[in-house]
Image 1 (tube, rainbow, N blue to C red):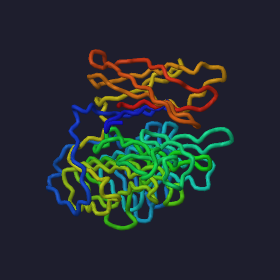
Image 2 (cartoon, helix red, strand yellow):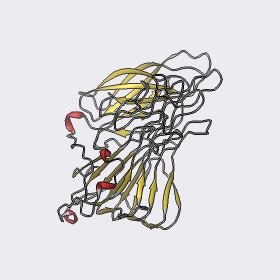
Image 3 (cartoon, rainbow, N blue to C red):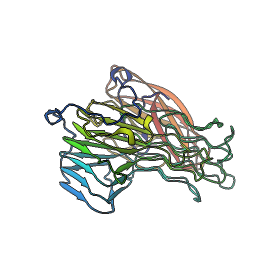
Image 4 (tube, rainbow, N blue to C red):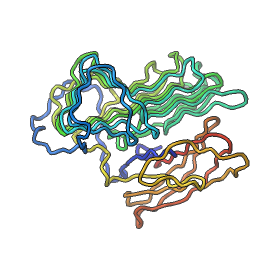
Length: 411
């Protein structure tokens, strides 16, 4: 898996991406403190894309927001007051959280898009919004499942000892899980375009893997502020397995902030007990006055610059699922659900995929991820040089009578 990918679930979770030759990624920064930028941010013409439809919103207590189908929340301005906590109910398509604002965004409380743990549960740890679930535990003769996501850990025989047969951890920013060969692969890029969450850990015969941290974009035409206080933060941590000696936790997720002026402190994308890889943090602003990056956890997750791009711009490249096993999926919208083939269905099925705005040959991987058992990856190439959009069909093995997710990533 390269650092550039596009993912599209059968849930038609659309992602945007940039061809490698058009995206110059900034250098990863670690542990930077109290950066001061120029005081010209107020003159920068940046449009977050917010329509302002939700108006000026002030949140003063525990609040759970139901995400719309596209995951985008349009504010005029947003303030989360001290002691308030904001969580989200994932939409049917598990998109990231997109908070767009025409005015200031001030976070004096807490925002949670974290992944869930799996200890004591029959099922896997659930990913945060835009993140991915852990692999399911085994049941009877059914084998455990691999963790979901591009960095999902493989299923294994055990979760505690770090042996080659241990279930693997979810991976995002960096390799994780010394002693096991089942951990996931590094993916994504420093700019977090496309925005995507953390991956789940692999399941075992007795427990599911931890869920990956979710993904959140906050973009403001003016300013984003997170004051320096222990109770003010954004939490996109990955779900733990339950004990620190395990290696099948979910990876941390993704936090992306974009505004002319950013004053940020606590941004958390670590796995909660070290059983999975950290996630990624990206900040883009002109003015970083009053930022203190010493509270980013972990420090190596941080990248920052002045590329004022949200990744939601319509001209950017994207990959879409058109149909699976002859079942068409809605275009220009988002469909949801697993595919479930009836008993007696042939194993090989066509998956039709469409590429837009790449302007080149697009190498992709079609990933078949059943609830139980290992994932299968089939490589393909879409020629997007002369036709836009361009479509191709790929034949993949899909087991009958078992729920399956179909994922498509750039390679």
